[in-house]
View (cartoon, rainbow, N blue to C red):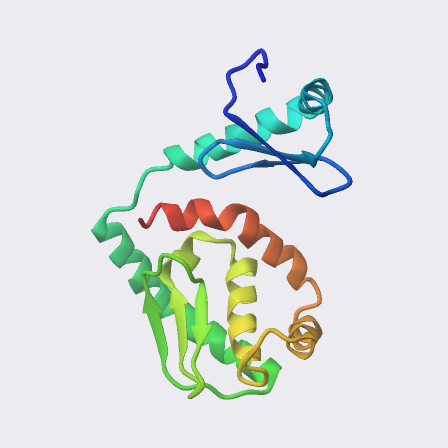
Length: 185
């Protein structure tokens, strides 16, 4: 398939009823389409989504070009997190109605936070690069694990009870968070 701009496109024909397009983190475009979809129809679909594809590719490229943080910068983030996160954890723990153990700040490549069965909390120092509302969401998420150590419907209902707009904050983390994590690698 050729388009006016050079795109790396992979077409996967499978048992589905509609076509879907995904732009991967490395800038590839994956089109999943019903088995008998003609090439001309796939080209038409790609052309109809050109603006979205170009916008998404630009976002992927800007993420890839974000400068990596130096060891010193990461240490500064960790120091700042050690000062800022514990008081916020305490305030939110009172609202959630839970206790907790140790708070540890880490430079993690895949997680924003975690909660152990013993009630110890770990947070990623990269949270200092996120909006405060997003950091608060991660804190509430981990504190809710003190009541539900899983991601069941009861867990999410508890998160929503404490933070009614958590879905918006979580969405930000899913769409923008990977670019921040990538700066730590």
